[in-house]
Image 1 (cartoon, rainbow, N blue to C red):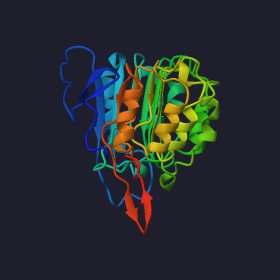
Image 2 (cartoon, rainbow, N blue to C red):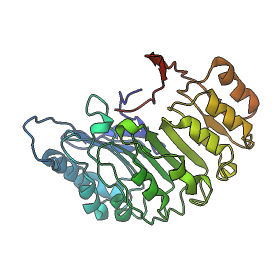
Image 3 (spheres, rainbow, N blue to C red):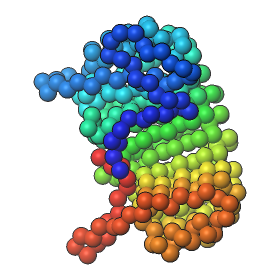
Image 4 (tube, rainbow, N blue to C red):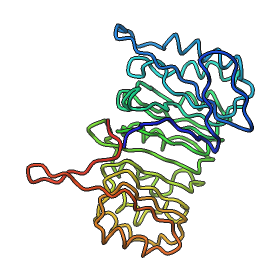
Length: 316
C-alpha cells in the first residue's frame, strides 16, 4: 500500500478543495476544507516554511476562517524540504474559532514519501486549539510529540512508516481525558519505528485513557507480539473496536489472540493486510460470531537466502 490518492472524506464530511485563486466554491452542508500547494524547487537549501503556502493559507483563513469546522492540510510546498506549517496553524488559532477536526499531512507518495515528510512536534496544535476533537497526522522525518493536557480531544491518529518510541511515550504521558479513539501506525525499525510492546505497557494495562473504545496499533512489524500481549491486556474488555491491520500478523499472533480473553464483546476486529494461512484466516471469524472480522488482503512473505520476510503496508 502507498498513499496514492487524497482523502475524500474526513471527520464524517466530504472534502472540498480550496481553489488556487478566486472565491471558495458554494457547498451544501458541512464539509472539510482541504488546503494544499505543492511546488518543488531543487535549489532550496534552507528548510523553512514555504512562502507560497503561507500566503495561500492566510488567504483561505481570511476568506473562511470563522466558519471552518474541519480542515485538511495537504502539501505545504515540498514536504521533504519545507517543514509543516504547525507554527502558522497555531498563530491563526484565534481566526479559526470553530475548528474541531484537523488532518495534517494529506500527501500522496508522488508528492512526497511519508518517511521524508518534515513535520516536527505536533503537540502545539493541541495547545493552540483547546476545542479540537479530532487530530490526524501523517509524517515521518523528525515526527515528534510532547506530553500535553487536552480535555476535548476524542480521536488521535498518527500515520507513519516508523513511529519513534519517544513519540509513543509522550502520547501515553499526555492527559487526554476525552480520548475514545487512538490509532498509532507503529511502522518498522528501518524507518524509526523502535517502539516495542513494553513501551505500550501503560496503555495495554488500561492505565491510560479510560474512555478508550477503539484502539488501532496498525502497520506494525511486531504485530504478532502485539496480538499476544492483547490476549491478556486489561484494556481489551473496554474496547468496541480493535485494529491490528496493515502489519505483519501471522498465525502465531492470531492463535495467541484467540487463545486469550474473550473477544466476542467487540463490534469489529480489523486484521486486513496480514500473513495468515488460509486455515487461520477462516478460523478467526469462525471463533468470533457476531463480530465484524476483516481478514481481507492476505499477503505472502518474500523468501531471500532461505529467510522469510514480511512487510508492513506502509514504510518509506
